[in-house]
View 1 (cartoon, rainbow, N blue to C red):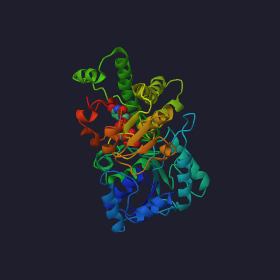
View 2 (cartoon, rainbow, N blue to C red):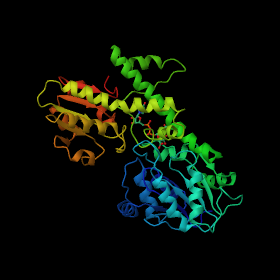
View 3 (tube, rainbow, N blue to C red):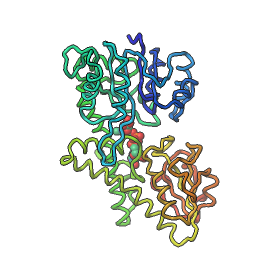
View 4 (cartoon, rainbow, N blue to C red):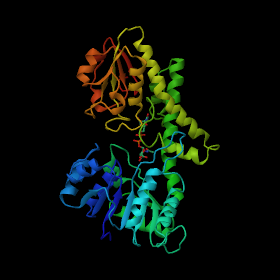
Length: 414
Ligand code: SAJ
C-alpha cells in the first residue's frame, strides 16, 4: 500500500505534523507548500512553526529520507489537502485555497488515487472538489457521477488541539466521510497507518457538518462563559467564584471567560454554518458576536485603568491566541494590544510574548509599542494586563504586581 507515497498539500499546523506522523510509521511522505521558505526549512530538517515534539519528528523523518518537501505536486497514491479555509469580509467561506490545491493535484492523477480534504470546510465542499477535478480531468471518472470512479474523494477533518497536536493526531478518533462508502474505506486506510483512536466512517457532508458542529459547540460554550462574565462584572459579582461553585453540580461544566476567542478554527468555523443557513443559525451567530465583542470590552477597561496618568506604561502579557503556543492567528490578545496603543498614543505599551522573537507585523508600525522581556516590563508598568495564561506568567507574584492596576482577563492570579 502507498508504494508511490502520500502527498500532503499545505505544510502548516496540520499538514506538517500529519506528514511527520505518517513518515514515522514508514510511509514515504511528499510534502507540498507554496511557501518556498517553508520547503527549504523542512528539507533542512527544521520546523518553521512551534508545536511540542514536532521538531524532533520532522528532523528524524527528513534525515531518514522518509519525508521531503517541494513546491510542486508529485505523483502519489493519496493526496491530503490541509490548506487554510478563511472567511471573506462578509463572513462567507473563502474556498480559494482548497480550489487551488485541488487544481494543483489534478495533473498528477492517473486513476487509483484517493484525494482527502482535511481542511475544515462548509457542507458539500468535498462534492465540489470531485466536480472541480472532473472538469480538469474529463479523461477520469469521479465519485459524484460514477459508481466505479477512477479516483476516490473523501473528507477527514482534522480535530487536533494546538499544543497537543502530536499526541492527539494519534489518539483522537477520526471521522472519515467519503462521497461513496468505497471512498470512505480508501481514505480510512490512510488513517489506519497511524491513528490509534476509532475511525468512524460516514458520508462526506455529515463529516463536514460534524467538524463545524464540534467547533461551534465550543464557541457557544465559551460565549456562555463570556456573557456570564459581563453580567457578573455589571452587577459586582466575581464570575470565577460563580463558575467554580456552579461547576460542582454534576451536570454543569462552564468553560472559562477570556479576552475573546482566537485561532483559525473556533473564531471562523461557526460562520460556515451561519452562511449555510443564515435564518436558522441564530444562537451560533449570537455566540460569535458575543465572543467577538470581548476584545473591545477589555480595551475599554484598560483605557479606564490608565485613567488620569499622562504617560502610562501598560504591560500586555501574551500575544498568542491561547496559552503555551506561538500561534498569533486571529489572536484577541494581539488585537487588544494594538487597539490600546492606538487609543492611548501617549502611553508606552510593552508587549511580552515569550514564544515570539520579534514584534508581530501588525504591531511593527506602532511607535509606542515594543516587545520586551517579562522582567523588563513588570517593574516599569503602571497597568499590567494578563491576556494569555502562558505558564511563564504563573510565576508572577502579588509582590511583583504591588501598587499596579491589574487586569487579569484569564483569572490566572485570582
Ligand atoms: N478559550 C476561552 N475559554 C475556554 C476555552 C478556550 O476563552 O474555556 C479561547 C482560547 O483562549 C482561544 C480560543 O478559545 O482563544 C480557542 O481555543 P481552544 O483551545 O478552545 O481551541 P483551538 O482553536 O485551539 O482548537 C479547536 C479544537 N476544537 C474543539 O475543542 C472542539 C480542536 O480540537 C480543533 O481541531 C481545532 O479547533 C481546529 O483546528 O478546528
